[in-house]
Image (cartoon, rainbow, N blue to C red; front, top):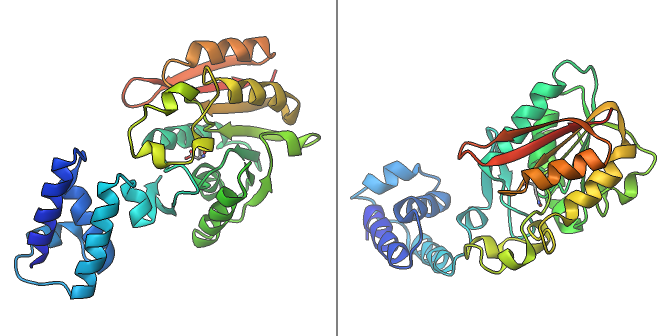
Length: 278
Ligand code: GLN
């Protein structure tokens, strides 16, 4: 069977299973195994892949049919122009989080050597992106999960960024430390909603998604514990779940922060919140 036919057959099965982007997924899986560009494979009516490639492809197709996220099967995901290794130990980096990084890079561009803490670092996409954009910064990546930290360390090494790592339950390990920026994309989905998420998302670590009964548990702890860890004028910048902006904004005001500012993502959801230590 030619490359084109293999992709066609897999995409028909993906489509029947309700997988959103069937042809793209099939072509990317074959591209992953052959190293050839997906578009050229889709058009290739001549070459017939080796039986071992066909077997591996079929195995990946079965996994995708069981709703394993495409990025876990490919072993990587793009973020802010770089490829990050991902697997079931971490949340897959999302495009809206790129906007959070863009904002942070803008805010810190004139601070000479900022100290940055990426809380709930997962794959490390935020902290590594900030270090790459601000080489003079000292960046610490922290997560409660040793598995996530191991993968973040792989990513930092692969991308040649010099960052530090610290296993910590949110800010527990940081009393006495101070930062110019604490940035986080924390778990923010209300626990009950976690049960009804898209099947792919349910294969991502629950620890990275579940924000407690109202989705705000982690914000409450970060807002309380980050305050003494920020320099005067230091910034707390967080990603938000849909509809959580007002509640988080109120928590920030009650916690003594000032100059709160909210920004939308590209779908118009109020997705990011910044607040400053007075
Ligand atoms: N910081 C990582 C990301 O933005 C992981 C976030 C998390 O685990 N909640 O993708």
